[in-house]
Amino acid sequence: MSSPSYIQKNKWLFALSIGIVTQLFLIGLLIALYFAASFNFEIIKTDSSLSSIEWNFSKYVWRSGEVMSTYGNISRLENYQNQAFPGLLNKLFELDSATKSNGSSSLNASVIPAFRLFNISIQLASAVICLIGILFVFNFSIFCKLVWEYILLSDSFNFQKLTLVILFNVLGFYIASKIEQQEFERTELTWLSNLKWVKQIWNLRNLKHYFNISSSSSDNPDDIILETRGLTFSPYVNRNIFKKLFSSSKGDIERQILKDINLKIKKGSFNVVIGPNGSGKTTLIRSLINLNEGFTGEVLWNGKEISTINRTEFSRQVSYIPQFLNLQNEISILDFLEMFRYPYRQLESNNPDLDHSLVMSAMEKNDCAKWQHKMIKELSGGQKQKILLTSVLVQESEIIVLDEPTSFLDVKNQHQFLEILKEFHRKGKTIIMILHDLQQSIDYADNLIVIQDGEIRASGHPREIVTSRLLRDIFRIDCEVNKTPAGVYLNNIYAL
Image 1 (spheres, rainbow, N blue to C red):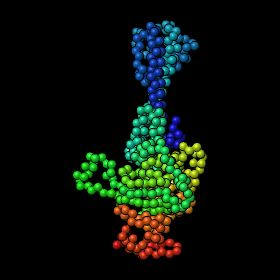
Image 2 (cartoon, one colour):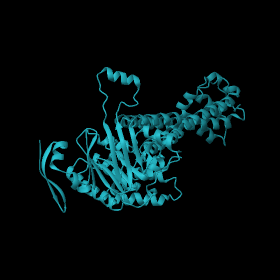
Image 3 (cartoon, rainbow, N blue to C red):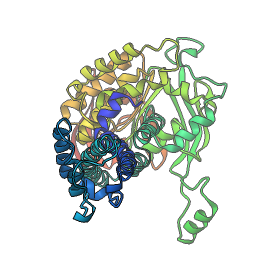
Image 4 (tube, rainbow, N blue to C red):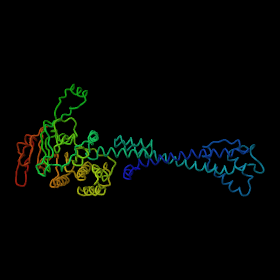
């Protein structure tokens, strides 16, 4: 059966499945009562005085009160006299006076017991019909509520769940829960990426090359954990030939978003990628973790080509938070964050209690434990971003890749999260991050990567590479760059 948490998150859908099952059961019971009443009615007709009565189930159900009254009168008279039995039955079954008996009863011995059972069947059928009507109103109300809610959410899978429940009831709800769980784990779990990445997982999961940060030949801080050689990316590479011809016919020029990127990232370094809008920062980040199809050149993690690395193992070592992610799931924050421990479930050392403890600790550290029972769809944009950032703490990865993680946060929460990353950096974790705020980038990075028009313009420690001329050429701003023992500061900034 589905987990209690899933039932709680989809309580109305579950109620609909139970309601439909109950309604179907009652319909089946009504059919059985129909045959029971019909069988006993035929026994009643065996009496010669009642042989002309006609069977009409709906009429007798409608007159169930009269049937009950007749049964009550017969019960009271049974121990005293039975001369009135035929008259009572004749009245109930609407026989004319010519067919009535007079004097003593001439009823067969089996008629009265059969009438008792007939009465029971009719009374139960009347009650069941009322319950079916109530359930129909209940189920239809829930159906309308769910349809309206799913229209607002604009999620086609919700309608698939609704269809499964209508067709298969509780079994359909169970199937929907399993499908949703699998899809969630495969699409939003570890990398929070799209279905293309899922396909890559299944293609690469059995490869022999396992990625391990600790597999470096030494503990030298200058060890290169990531290197790119001639990395180039164009959105037109591997495109369908017909689409390519169509695009060319419109005069599109095949352009390269990344151009011959040669980059080295040291183990345990804090790397910040900066550059103007549209310079290729996000494309670079996505290419480094193999989320872009069609790039050329080499991306080497610990000396291994990215395309040959086992993805399940890779996801244990690298966590990624994308720039935008539409989170509309009907899942609590606590359950959502616990899913980020999924890559570790296959390990023999995996401990569910430890996973829960890590999640709670991460939520408290990022000041979002108060939301643990809320649904993701109930959060604001900034709150969702904060939950995604908490997922980084939950994964405990050695390498953290982030695309503008502070874009929806206020100043306080920006500072709080950057300090958390700084603490991770002090513990030896490798950070690769895109930021837009120049001063924050300079304050936190020990390796600043400046990109413009898909090319690396400068790379190194901020104290070494940040100059007024660089900022003027790249960002079209003029400012004073003050380098002090405490750090590098930008003053008197204005646009050119």
